Amino acid sequence: MIRHIVLFTIKDEFKQDIPQLVEGFYGMVGKVDGLMALEAGGDILGSERSYDLGLVTLFRDRASFDAYQTHPAHMLVKKRIHEARSGSVACDFEVKE
Image (cartoon, rainbow, N blue to C red; front, side):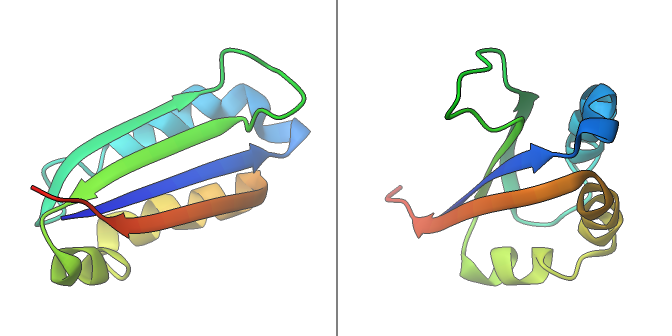
């Protein structure tokens, strides 16, 4: 299985849109084959080291994760998030079953 984690910094003018961005992530559930779990949410702490928005997904295997990269449901969300973000960091790794 592959765990995909992304943390986003959102531009000030889009911070009010964080709930809609989160819903966009959840909109991929059931549409992307091999997407086994998804969690997303806006930061609740607001510390100096906080990011504004987080996404954590779990994919069945590397092939599913690779297919996700160009899946139409992901591309739609990706387009929207790229308009709203000023930066992001990611980590992708294998997890044992």
